[in-house]
Amino acid sequence: MRLEDLTVIVPTKNEAANIGPFLDSLDPRVALVVVDASTDDTRERIAAARPERTTVVFDESTIPEARQLGLETATTEWVLFTDADMSFGDGYWDVWQALDLGPKVGAVQGAKLSADDAYRTYYKLFSFGIRAMSWLTVPAGSGSNMLFRRQALLDVGGFDFALTANEDIYALWSVRKAGWRVPYAGGLKVYERDHRRLEEGRFKKTLHGWIRPLMLFTGLGGDRVRKSSWGYWDDAEGGRSDAPKE
Image (tube, rainbow, N blue to C red):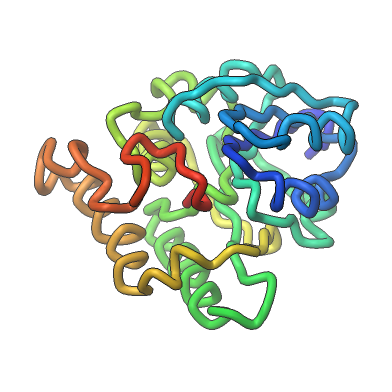
C-alpha cells in the first residue's frame, strides 16, 4: 500500500498539549486533514509543525460530523481516522506499506495500546478483543485507529450523525454489512497518551465500548441507544469536548 494514497483525519478541540507528539509520529508522505473547533493555538501549532500536505478546516460540530467533513475533504483512496492524543508506533507506516489489501477489503482495524505503564493490560485485552471479534467477522475496532477505503465508507453514507458515541464502530459495521471485508492488522499500532476515560472507570469505558455497539448491531434498545451517549461526554453531549475522544 502506498503512503501517498492515505489521508489521516483527526477531529480536534483544544489539543495544544497533545498535537506535537501526534504530529511527530506522522510520516511526511501521508496527507493530514484536521477538523478543528479549538479556542487555543492548536491550529497555529499545526501550521508551524506540519505546513506540507496538511489541510485544517475550522468547524464547530459533533465528532461524527467532524469525521464526515474530513472524509469528504480527503481525496485519497484510503483514509485513517484517529485522535490527537495518540501516537503512531515506530513501525506503523512500514506495516501499512507491506499490506496487500485486495479489492474486497473496505476497512482495516488496528491495535490500540498504552504509551506508558498505565492501563497497559487493559489496552492489550482491548486489542485482543478486536482481534477475536475479527475472527468472527464482526468489526469491533476503535475510532483511534481505523482505516477505510474512502469510497466504501461514502457509499454506506459515512458516519451516523445521530450517534455522539460509538459512531466509529458503527461505521465499520456499516461497511461490513455492505459486503466488504474488514480485517484486523495487529501490526498497525497506535499508543494512547491520555487515560482520563479509564480513570473515570474501566467498567464505564467497557460498557460504552462493547455493550452499546452490541445493541446497535442487533437493534436492541432501538432509538434509545441513539438519543444519548450514556454520559460518555460529561461536559459536551454533542461530542466536541476538551476530553480525549474514543
